[in-house]
Image (tube, rainbow over all chains, first blue to last red; front, side):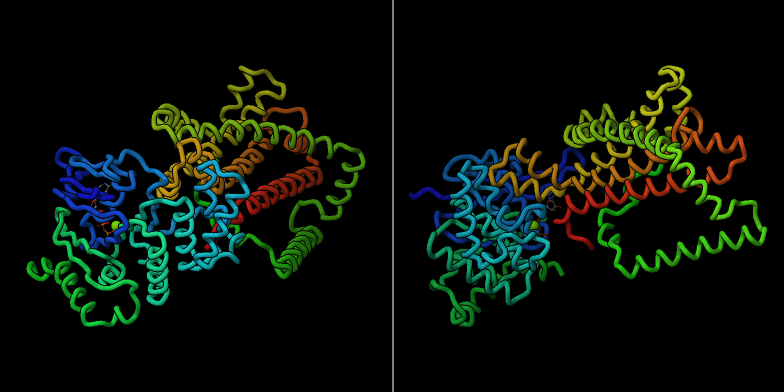
Length: 258
Length: 264
Ligand SMILES: Nc1ncnc2c1ncn2[C@@H]1O[C@H](COP(=O)(O)OP(=O)(O)OP(=O)(O)O)[C@@H](O)[C@H]1O
Ligand SMILES: [Mg+2]
């Protein structure tokens, strides 16, 4: 059996202690394969960000194992690029300095740093804004810059927490296509959290649906749609059918409870 | 002493003066001086006329006394302010970064913050003598307390997302401190400097009223003994102008260092 890129093994996360203890995630087990795009959906508070932060090494699990390349995650590292919902660009650095930040940490020389940064800024269409400060960028441009910053350090895993959540529908579709296009070249492993069921289906090989209270696995849905994905795929009946399945999986419990 | 944070960090955007504003400010000043002049001419008050104040200003300027007084006051403020700020920044960072440092230092700061710096003067004079040291010490205290509180506030309010973003790119604690915490808290620190300089200036003048042989405050106190109103006015105007200049300088520095900030 090929080793999974990311593995959750019986993972639980409890916040607080004693009477205030709160189980955010319980008994979570799943794998993400190398080069696979997996989206994670589920109601608010079901532990999506928590799960991702554990892969990123920003948070530790209370029990169970979180593995990347078969090794337990102990700390953050540039092998796992993270793209946050709030962009998290450093406002005191220019666009290029933001992208160069991670490269500097890898002790790359000035010239190479600059070249790499400009290369990735070109990819996301921000070359002309290299010397601008983030405050002058639109939301979509900020997110593209954050993507360039994450890509520049050449991570093997991309962790994206509702990266396009704050963007308008048009920009969002553009960035989804851009993500897929880049993926078709480099085949990185992607773990992508979203609230948008359409988005979850459109970009993914598999959709992981989590349930809330406590956060746990609800269902894993395969997306048997061809790549490259385009509008034709998005408008196809097969797409609609899978989307409906995901939709039902996400909202199932709510309708039952109501 | 006024305390941090009621001056919003986003304020600089509104501080810019359009040329039109300058015109209205000049008009407003001219109007105020006109009223003052009218009041003195009509005999409503015992204020000196604007004219006599101007004459005294020129006298004191030519005489050199005014410059000496300004120098004496400025020197105290700048030394005290510099020492206070230089110490406040590392202490503030320490408090923001290490909980233990915060737990150890914070009670002292909270305690001294509620004591007006001037109230320290009697103690300072008894223990430090009557030369420059007690005055500078009191100013140092005033500047330090303002700057330390805002530095500390700045550090603890750094958005966690920035820290996480740096960590996932491979940054060590040291790098995060230098490249994230320091720049992110700079706006707060500068607000602290601004407030600190303001309270240092207020403190020096008051300290000179109580215990000094030179400086603008001392000059006013002397003038008061001789009922010399024009000199009191000249000193007040000098205090106002110098305070304003220092404030503008800090605002300029602030604008330069935090130009990246989104202003609401
Ligand atoms: N640091 C924390 N301390 C205590 N509780 C926390 C902490 N972080 C998250 N939680 C709780 O854990 C649960 C899962 O949070 P998480 O942020 O992972 O949800 P999510 O699925 O990402 O939600 P959303 O879709 O709203 O982003 C929530 O109930 C939240 O209140
Ligand atoms: Mg979340």
